[in-house]
Image (cartoon, rainbow, N blue to C red; front, side, top):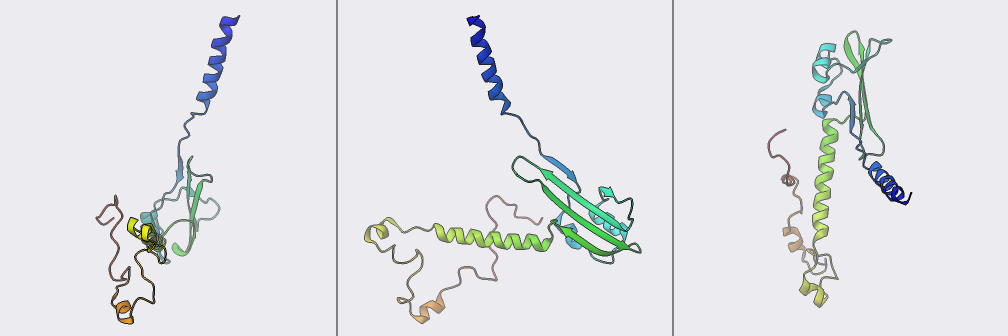
Length: 183
């Protein structure tokens, strides 16, 4: 009896430990719409132009032929809530009358995200600068933020000569690991 107890306990512990290692696959359903295509969608386009641009809608509406719904659903272990997006195109006399966008990104959204990302990267780099060992030992690094001097020590001429940290005419370089060619 004792000989069976130890293997049974080990088998039960092994089964409990292995039950937490279940793979949950990503689930992707519907029409994945690219921001460039959604940005090109305009009122007055024909049904064939919309179908060429966005593809055939996943679920055609049987009760309303003047409406096309493009649904997208993505579920993953990484997200608590699944990602749900919907683009609805309304037609009148086979021309786009209006567009209802619920969560599908457009080029303007991507441009805003890119601008926000560049700003966050610049702020992070600015905040990473620490005073040198000599500045910390002498106490000179505590008075002002590194890389800047107090306004009283600058003359107005020196303040005018300093360039802006991010000139508006020059774009920031792409972060490391991103493709450099046009997408």
